[in-house]
Image (cartoon, rainbow, N blue to C red; front, side):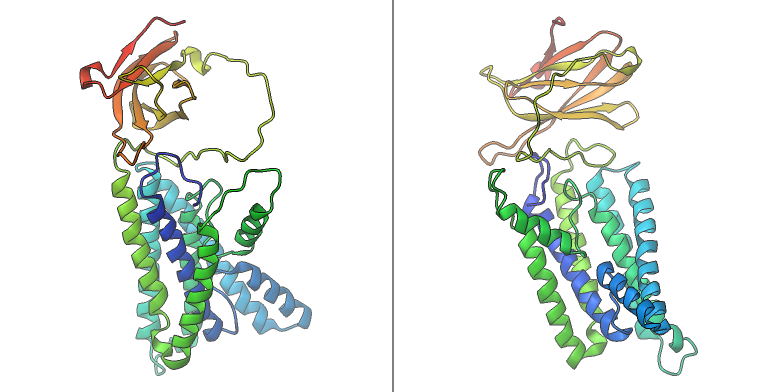
Length: 362
């Protein structure tokens, strides 16, 4: 997979989103490669090499072509990052990523309308290919900015060198436990199959080659909506926080507990079942303004600790991990935080009025 949080629902669907977007990048690279002096809309490594080649050979046409592609992609990164960041001020990250991908689809549809609407007799025909490359690069940059929030370090859907490096290296890392990752090889296969398929379309029906990436992005948006709907309970505004890689080696260190900044005591306690045994869960602390303040997973004994940062009223959301295939139902309680520690235990499976209780700080 791509390193989602433990409580993530529909992780395979979210993984399919990244595979479809990778296929879209491969398909659109074929269009720009044939249309505009062998440049790519999404693969910036190839464009940088070709730019260096043009500089070395003094080929100013090649230089201008690659600058157009690189400039369009960088512009898309800026636009996509700003768009997604503004969206995450109001929505959870899944909603923001879906909205940003919709923005990308709108750009592709506008680009397609221009590409098919300008005929050979139009005065705009000399700009047709330039607009195609810059616009396609813009759309791919928006896509890359959106998928930065899928997976702990982002899940690339265009630059595959890092994907090959991480996947192949992970297969032979002797100092870490082996863990098979299906997403990386499937994305590598997707870009090859999509590029090959669209090359065939380009050969026999070139007017239809731009349709493939648009359709792939549209399907990815539909699947992203399914993921968002499945994870609608207990979501908070802002970017995701991912679990650390369980294979990572963490050196032993002495941890000194300190009170939270601003004189507010921590919120801590345990999450247990009706039998009193610990239950794994994610605890999220949300401010009165709807912003995520802190988020942690329970320890093995069910204990947790959240730092609010300041006094006030907060919403404490408990999202149990899925166990035995059962759906996790989040619980939410109001917590008042002042200068003293707040101890609140949560009992899963209890009636709403008995779902949690305060106990004296220890």
